[in-house]
Length: 225
Image 1 (spheres, rainbow, N blue to C red):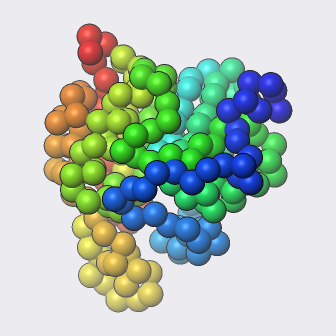
Image 2 (image 1 turned 60 degrees about the horizontal axis):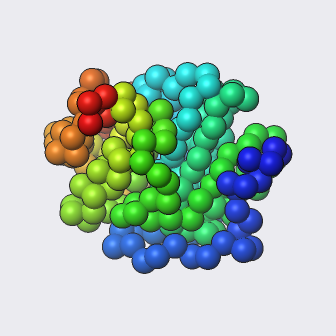
């Protein structure tokens, strides 16, 4: 790991818990990874590649994964941006971040993970080319969803891209996966679009992700703002 990477990647043992958030915080990494695998029907890698493709992630860019969980998407993003690019992940759960750091080390990639809350992310203004949020907004109360997207806009560079992905509605079919999914919450495509516009972002693409009933909205931070 380079000196710059060591500077940004804080050891979990020394990390102070983030300030309290009004959103739901998941603290069981093993259960989280199992549920993600179950919901994706074993196609998590394909889903990650789809998300990064929708965000138009390119070599050399700086990427932030908001609510990064156990770091799987952030690690995949680092492979996309290459040695010249930088990837950061932020999550309110120290337990999730501990698993994320172990995954990154095992994968042999350098990702900077930070403990923080979506109400006040620990990054300066206009730092990232791409800001990602995948199946996280539904964990937040309505007011906090708006605050989160505004924070995502704040840390995006002028001309930078913000991608949000979430479940679009309840799955009424039978089976264990569907029952888990119904209890997982959702945010409609119209809601996602409104959140982006209200935050001062310009929507450039939206629609179905192609996995279960997930939707996405891709937006840009205007260069003049």
